[in-house]
Amino acid sequence: MKHTILIIEDDTIVAKSLELLLKRAGYAVRSVTRMTEALPAVNDCRPSLVLLDMNFTIDTSGKDGMKILGQILAEQPQLPIILMTGWATVQLAVEGMKAGARDFIAKPWDNKELLNAVATQVEQASMAFGAVAGASQVGKEQNPFGGIIGSSPNLETILDQAARVAPTQASVLITGESGTGKELVAEAIHAASLRAKGPFVAVNLGGVPPSLFESELFGHKAGAFTDAKTDRKGHFELAEDGTLFLDEIGDLDLAAQVKLLRVLQERQYQRLGDSKIRKTNVRILSATSRNLHSMTAAGTFREDLLYRINLIHLPLPPLRDRPADIPGLAEHFLASARRRYDRPELTWSKDALGWLRKQSFPGNIRQLQNLVERVAILTHEPRLQVLHLEAHYRKKQAESLTPSGVTLAEMEVRMIEGALGRNGNEIAATARELGLTRAALYRRIEKFRIKQ
Ligand SMILES: Nc1ncnc2c1ncn2[C@@H]1O[C@H](COP(=O)(O)OP(=O)(O)OP(=O)(O)O)[C@@H](O)[C@H]1O
Image 1 (tube, rainbow, N blue to C red):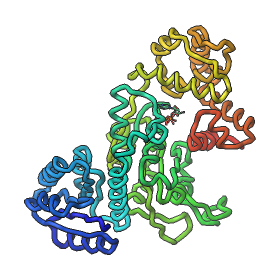
Image 2: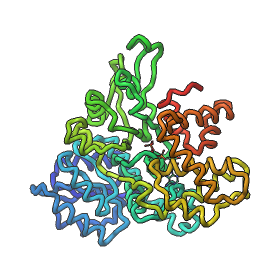
Image 3: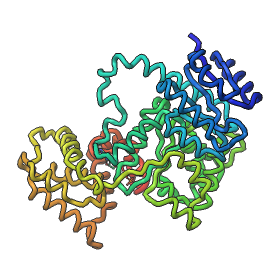
Image 4: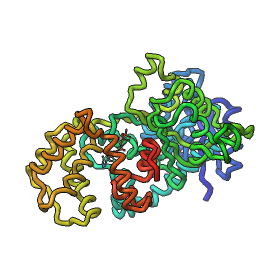
């Protein structure tokens, strides 16, 4: 069966070229140019997807577009709608996505990207339709967000948004203190996207020296600079058809910001020392613990770059703002410690969970996770009590406060080196032991320049 796409676009030339493109890709197409025709056309041709121009009519406020969007969704809430808008009015697309549109395309559009977005949404809508009957069989493990523990309203709202934006092409900026789960959320967004079969490539921009920025991100040709002995792919190329996670984006210097912005705008790049122009099809997710808005005000972060990466903003709350999640997280980490260290008898005492709830965890979930690990490894009794926790919590606090003591970073390095040694440098097994994803482990190996 051919899927029908309905185009709602008042500019007949734009509508015609969209029609041609979609027909060539095998869709049946119907287009309307007047607002009043939109709803009757939806009811009449039963489209699989609607492409809606937000700057409908001469009025550029987008009011008409929002109105049509609302009318269509009121009648057919499941119908996927992709918005089209100029970059200057991209804020409209954000409003539209909040109101229920599935994706947006910026004009002038890239044909391949547009067809990808259409195919993605059409495919997903038919999958969702087929899945209704079997919905109850979909287990938590199949839900990419299922591994993110927590049910505090301030986290759930963010995760709902993340799940809604996951299947789109929208760029997402995840902010939050260190250890709040930014990378975990980025991985879940990728896994819930239709790029899930493509690569998820994480790059810690804080760990890339400015002189190597281009070579790391865009790759190089042998001989491009003294140390470039062979051709090398950059992170953009490695992430082709997948997701590129730009971690610590707030650490980029201004020169690197310009280079990154250019590639995001032009969707093409060159390897260093190579004249060949390469097109890129990656979805950008970024993260930072810094406040990019104040950096923009201070002139240390480019506003136009922020605008590109920040279509959807997901601020992750620190653990102290959701203490109710602490017991669930502690149970979760203890469950993995039981499996990992083969200690099925380990349990929490009620007091221990109550005590944990009351602690401040400046290192957020990572700190809680490390504490649970230590206590599980070093306590011989099966029932974990407050006194066991207290000893390790205080020790940890003292260590990170005493300049002559071991810092958190040193501790991390030691743990990673130890685990690599125990697992014969095998990344997957090491990551499993440390309770990290492979990407997170690679990132740390790179960040701390750990030799394998
Ligand atoms: N809600 C959660 N449920 C279960 N595990 C979590 C959750 N949030 C974070 N974690 C775990 O906590 C650790 C830290 O998370 P992650 O690396 O994603 O944080 P981050 O914000 O990216 O940190 P950083 O900014 O320091 O890189 C990881 O091991 C992650 O799996």
